[in-house]
Image (cartoon, rainbow, N blue to C red):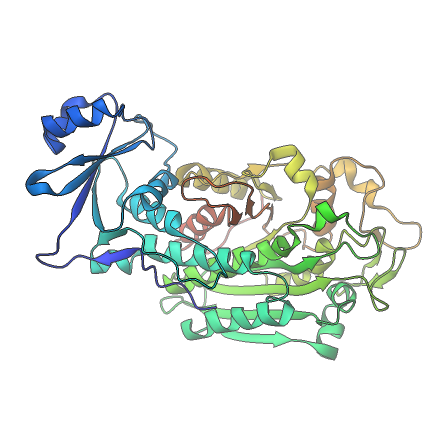
Length: 475
């Protein structure tokens, strides 16, 4: 699927008829009047407009043109809220609109929020109707906010695509198609080469008629020297998860096309880093598999020797995501990256603990964890740190192997999953693991129901912050 062209953005042209949205706050009525005029404000108030955050009202403008008033949240130092501008893309009538907002509102938030609000995914045969367009400059259409929107919409498209249309080979092909035009070297492994290099991942993926794929991409920014920071990204790409022999109930399987949300997130992030030509070195690994029930599927109590040499007993075939990630993490560590990040829709336990909007973050480096927390707060893209609690490590013991892929106790599932992954990360490696839901259960401004990429804006901000440093020392 191609990267979306953002038809919701229109480049400003001379003499083009424009309608204006005035973004205002409840406490500044005199500003409403100065912008829209007393008659328009009186009309808006007669319609019940009080500038509540996200409230929109159309009002008469000069020369018969339509204009609008749009309510903003009251002033806060943090957090920013780009999503609120998604409501404009949903509620404005068709036409070309410009937004005038107070000086403290970040222009990129307006553009990003509008684009994310305009996002739709549909396989219906009828043509979609026209939508309102936000008027931007030519530079803004190529800028960071628009590129971020393209990346997020690309990931949303991947997550929303039905599993019959997006299997392991299709996901690998999408990665290659997206990254090669940006100068990345992309290798797709399958068959015997994959079985030998990634035995745990292969043990999951070979249970499906749609065989596994591993994507390995490498890229250098045009301004990245030999000592530029090396960032390594790893994504879980389980294109459908039946649970295997430990099969899920039908309700648990309903959204499992989204189980490749981690791969979609890091692929979109890699695309954005390359499109912005950040001065970093980048590696990307995607484990693309389907977890199926078949005569070739892994069985409970199987024991597999991993790429690292550790043996793993399969205590539960529905704990497949950590198997997919383990060999990839170990291989990524062989390059000694400055920062190693994996993203995965890994555990229901993280959702029980934090709900759908807060990805769980695990990190073996306190300074790096703080960097992520600060980026998440600044971008209003929350991440919530949970502990790599060593006291639970013994729960992963096996009587016949080095590790069991499932804990012996039905508690702290997100923590024990992260502890399992930590066995495949070098002790001196700076590592972040993000357990994400990658889905919106209901529609909100800028966040329609369906696939999504929480944390991607915070991740990108962290990577940008590394550009001025050579190494991140482990604390």
